[in-house]
Image (cartoon, rainbow, N blue to C red):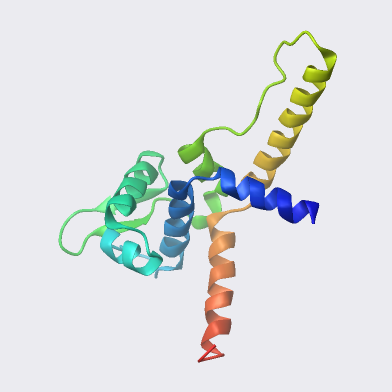
Length: 153
């Protein structure tokens, strides 16, 4: 129960923009190689308002996660292999670092709490760095394939 509560709390710390960014990257990873997907199509498929989809894609482009092609058949694609883009990298691009530093405090009890929080942050960042967009895309692909075998559910 504590683990589920912790996961729920951590997920709430992520912004809606971060969730959108991760979803967009997974969707692009699921797209056929060599194709571009327009922002409007990504927004429609993922239920993301178009202005938000544009904002997320611009930030992802600035951070080197996606590239864009202009023109009527243009759109967005992954700038790197999906296995090279970590969840932690994306979260850092949208939310910054989660690690708190113990810093200097007078009371040993406060220092102990801050040190513990820093260790939790480091463990959290290590966990986020261990998962890739490719891994999430694999999970989504397996779910999509399983759902295709069970029409009407």
